[in-house]
Image (tube, rainbow, N blue to C red; front, side, top):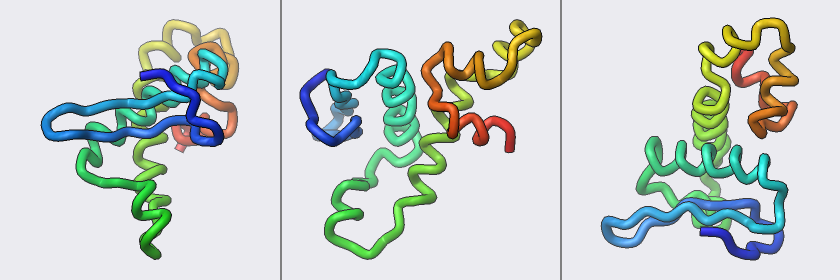
Amino acid sequence: MHRNLRNTLGFFSHYKRFRFIHLNNNVPEKLQTFLCAHELGHAIQHPHVNTPFLKTYTLYSTSRIEREANTFAVELLLPDSLLAEYQDYSIYSIAKSVGIPGKLVDYKLS
């Protein structure tokens, strides 16, 4: 679902049995691809965790949850098979071509 989310890049929500990924339609398309993969990570790994609520109303640190969603997104968009197919290119250029922000490439390297 694409909407103007102002300062929010995207988020995952669920209602009853339905799951939704909301993406900010004001961000570049390649970044939307990464955001969608990140939110899919939340949907699969943390389906019942409401991170906006936790950040706003509790002292619970969501950094582990966000790290796991980032790792999921990087692995989904940058599988080993893709790196093998384009071994003449740097991991950073391949990551950029699939929409992964440069600073998150480290999730693949670690």
